[in-house]
Image 1 (cartoon, each protein chain N blue to C red):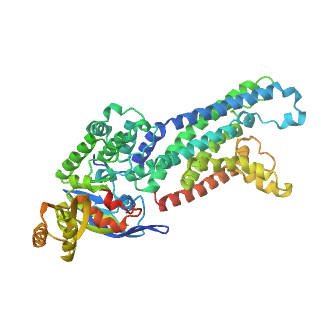
Image 2 (cartoon, chains in turn brown, blue):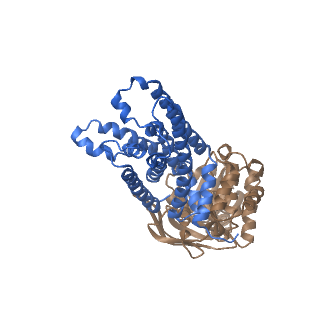
Length: 305
Length: 261
């Protein structure tokens, strides 16, 4: 269980995290979403006691991280897969970590096997691919068999098989009753991985809830092809519809249901060739929610998808 | 798996880290070569030119400090080892992984210090005693020699190792403050090598009051059997060097505790 209470973190003039307040519960996978630079990594660093909060606090199982008596037994974290000495072998890296928390070396071999990097255990980690480094980082997080796990952008650099593996792995951790907190800037990834979602933008909490409740709140759109687009657009607009051209031959209509559009078209003597309600994808929800808080957004970003 | 993190477990972890990177082994190897090899070279040069040395210089000749002259060069290898113990963790980002496992920062600094001091004390003492014996055997027969039967000779050799060990602590502490390998080593070199050069430009009447407090001059006094004129005594020089190290270490530990990693 992770608790963030009114957390504020300022670096010089930059406000990285602004009065953030949320809880991460055990037994489910909680996705931590936000555009790049929204404060996800800062929040995770504060949870791990690496950065000191400007205001507020972050606790793990009711305690400040620094006061945990054997941190690796309580919390496993992977913030940056490349945060290892390139000249040290994978096994020695893990042994040094294990020794600090009195974890037996036999456990090092176990996690090496579990993450599938036992064949390269005696190789220097400087030569590892990003995917292998991610697996080494996960091995390190698992060393103490912790109840709380934090992963910052864990799928970065993994191949499709690795992504599949890590998804199943998160699921099994959550099913064992552990707290799994995973950050990502990719909504599509979280849609298939997480149960609960916390969305932040510019350091502020935007929304939180289950995946289903989030998509339910999003406005959908209706894909329409008709005999006379110009006429249809004008009548839909007078009925309060928000119309845009989906492509050369079709319209995308929001703020009206497909039933309403069908009736309006019928009344205006426009023949409909196609009328397809489109459920907003989680990606759309995310873009909508964070549109105001993207730090370096390109102006055309919303139409490029 | 139900034990707490403690200073003992942190020391064990840091010892594994210390001996599993090549830079440590290379640094120790270079330290041995410079301490013993350069000491031998200069001892041999002294022997072969002994007849041309003036009588006055022959009288004040110190066979101990001359055989230990290699530490003037090997102190830079020591500086690199001390610095890398912490700055290499910043270079790779490993420090964040380390602090995730050991969030009690002063405990981490203490663990690193114990490993650094213990290992450096052993290897530098071995190197300094070896340099002493090699030097005396080269002098033997031509140049006056010293033997360990005199306590002030034993003190000079032991202090040579202590000088290097304390400099390792200074360099590590600078690394805690600066957090960057090249910058740390640059500052270290400035302190032990450039500072004495700068002081040459100071008027003589002031210089005599300043030079004796320079780290390199403290080292000279510590490794001499008879205190060179104008210097602090060997034990006072050691004390002065320890005070320097404690001040820099205190500043480094305080910053390490307060700053974001």
